[in-house]
Amino acid sequence: MTPQQIALVQSSFKCVAPIASKAADLFYNRLFEIAPEVRQLFPADLSGQKIKLMGMLATTIKNLHQLETLLPTVRQLGERHRSYGVSADHYAQVGTALLWTLEQGLGSAFTPEVKAAWSDAYSAIAGAMRQDERQVSVSGHASHPITEFGY
Picture 1 (tube, rainbow, N blue to C red):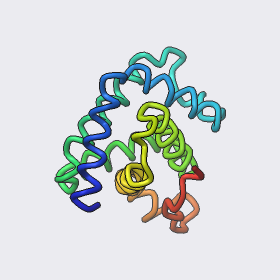
Picture 2: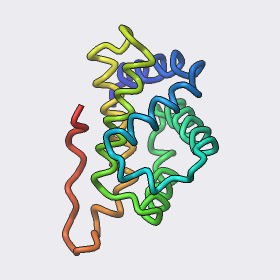
Picture 3: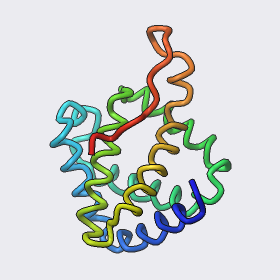
């Protein structure tokens, strides 16, 4: 990511942070709408999950300029997600839901440049989360990298 993209992600997230609870609601509602099969991976009460999501986003966005220091934590997060049953396809669905949520929260401030910056940020994080999965998949073949969010 370029310094300009990092700045765009960070500044746009500052606009979303005040509506974090609403953004989390929008995100999960959209995710379950486009990927109903993932609902079973989450607890019935999403309150704690929503707080975790927004906290992880805040920490990650704040530290995008030093992504290398976050990578071990992000990789561990990916390992945990695999143990919960998260598959490669889910990452694209989450990316789609995230971009849609940002568009709803930011409105006209969700410019093509902001969208591209967020897409690159998510690709970097999701790619790190999937690193071990890509190296050795269950079938013994390398998984495909994230290429598109379908959004």
